Amino acid sequence: MRSSSTISRWPGGEGRRALPFLLPALVVLCMVSLYPLVQGVSRVFYSYRALARQDVFSGWENFTLLLSDPTFSTAFLNSIVWTATSVAGMFLFGYALATMLNSKHLRFRRFFRTASLVPWALPGVVISLIWRYIFLPNGPLNAVLGSLGLRGPEWLTNPSLALWTCVIATVWMGTPFVTVMLLAGLQSLEPELLEAAAIDGASYIQSQVHVIMPSMRKMILIVFTLETIWTFNSFDIVFVLTKGGPGSASMTLPLYAYQNAFMYYQAGYGAAIGVVILSVLLLAVVFYIREVLR
Image 1 (cartoon, rainbow, N blue to C red):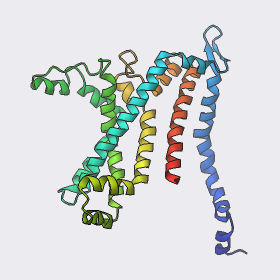
Image 2: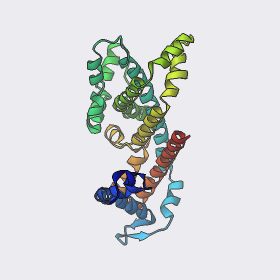
Image 3: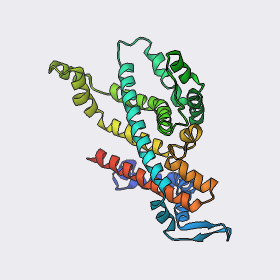
């Protein structure tokens, strides 16, 4: 009978022993993730015909329609702008908060660390409803502006402001996660690095840019990748705040896919939009893997 040390040295020995224990979880994972994914991708090649009252095979027709759909182009651009600005805002505010919460001179650090998690603990729909109330014409934000002698705009119905209201709500909801991750990275840094930078005469900004951030490179990449995926896939904030309006001023790809699949009964067209979303996010994942393995 082989000893445990012999099995651990045998190539793939531990993997073969663990496989029977992993099979039930793999089966469940395939049922709830892989099978719906395959079904969703297969729907791309079918279109609903109202006269026939059934889905018929249409080949690449749905992708062809995407190329000539102005609403899809607007939704794609809005998704890029929304994701880029939201993730950038989350990182800037999260890094500033993490630096502050990591300071030894901050009083009541435990209280502030706990309080910073409140937006992250709330459901996305609740956060969206809170911000919808704030942005109402007679809401708190316009009331504050009115007390300062300023006339508040129509935040949710102004085409040039609607998307940015979604950005503000998204940044507020996502900043706590970024803060926690970056705070963990800051606490894992070796004190000798900062001491060496101080001895070399590096300023605060130089220490942040040339010492701290390079040392937290992998952590920052994880934060950017996860927040990019979550934000690009986010549905609830835009749906509750603006429903993609006015017109298509704040339309995003997830919301447009939902409308086509469940409101216009064009499941194939909605699946085609989902494939586009999947392709964009795969690019983000590939970039992350390449940077980590470099």
